[in-house]
Amino acid sequence: MKFKLFFILFSFTQLIFSQIKNEKEERIEVSEFPEKAHDIIKILPEECKHLKFYKETDGEKHSFEAKFKYNKRRYSLEFSSNGIIEDIEITTKFKNIVDPIRNSIEAYFKNNFKKHKFIKIQKQYSYSQETDSKRFLIDIMSQNTRIAPKFEIIAEVKTEKKRIIKEFTFNNDGSFLSARILNPTSYEHVLY
Image (cartoon, rainbow, N blue to C red):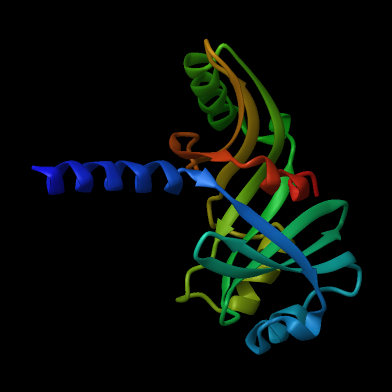
């Protein structure tokens, strides 16, 4: 009986911790990036501005990120620890999301929270290894892709009892997928 109770409490604790985003980001030099990622970085257009490199830790997961601005848009290109592209995110505004998707996301927030305030919104394009990584990057940056994005939204939400900052993920039709509480120490880099 004690073992069952311990197992239930342990499982519940793991579930709670897995729903908290405890991300740490540290600025690094490009030389500290995985070698395989260098080939992708080299094909970025010369017009890219403010190119910065980061090592990111979220619990057990380690990844690398290149952030830059291109054609007045902010990009975040994430790589696995061995240099494979995981996704590319583009910062956007809520009003720039097409109507049916925007309406679905707005309905989710209105139905689940007393108030909400969007802090950061990104279109997230996930990479599939069946696709050529260079073609994937070029297509996304030229806005010539057939890949439907997910939406990652950081928002301050108010429930009956408290205000919290969470990261929400919605699929390409605006349906809710997941949410994690954003640890305040993870919040520093959010506004890039």
